[in-house]
Amino acid sequence: MNNLTGKTVLITGAGSGIGKAAAVRFAQESCKVIICARNIEKIEALAAELKEKYQADTYAFALDVRDKEFVRAVIESIPQEFRNIDILINNAGLALGLEKFSDNLVEDWEEMIDTNITGLLYVTREILPIMLHRRQGQIINVGSIAGIHAYPNGAVYCATKAAVKTLTDGLRQDLVETPIRVTNIQPGMVETNFSVVRFHGDKKRAGDVYKGIEPLTGEDIADIIAYAAVVPAHVQICEITVTPTNQATGNIVYKKR
Ligand code: 8X3
Image 1 (spheres, rainbow, N blue to C red):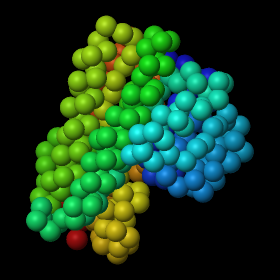
Image 2 (cartoon, rainbow, N blue to C red):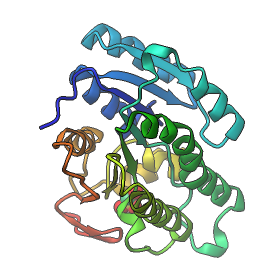
Image 3 (cartoon, protein in one colour):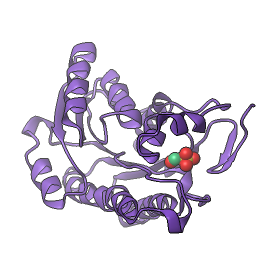
């Protein structure tokens, strides 16, 4: 197995959920952790926690992945001791709305496309040259089971995650002559603030999504991400799909009454 100690990991969308759990997981592995998200308060609180609890070297900054120039400037300004990024976890992403196509808000489509696809591309474009220069690295994208099969009322969200899958596959092909590994993690139902965001803050509706089923946790996914990173250098995990035991696809779910 690869030793993760001392590796530098950059995680987008690290303020909560899977991203935060991954930051904790890699801090526990004695990695240097770079965390960013839109909400600077959450990121600063997490940075303090990682330093205090795990004595992790941590660098934190606010980042909206949709802002091309800002992404470039802020990544360029990462201090020298954090610049040798070994693992990029493209986790920033969101779902907005769960309605029929005609009832969706156009603004929600735009935010999902700009964050889940374009933002992922902006960040990857800035980090990849560092990996190519060092001839090592791994890009781990957080896709979704929604990217494998669309489900009703989720057309645009599912399309963004299908794009993440295809982009991950294409990037892996373009990097086939290099030691850089490219991985897509495709979770099903994970109980984070995902559904609260999807339902525009409606906590009751969000809570109902996970009633009658034991969903995955952010920590479950962080463990899987860490596994994809820790396998030996000659092993490339291309993708992992993971669901709660009672979920088969995005919309085939068994719930106890
Ligand atoms: C979210 C997965 O199954 O809740 O990316 O749509 S699911």
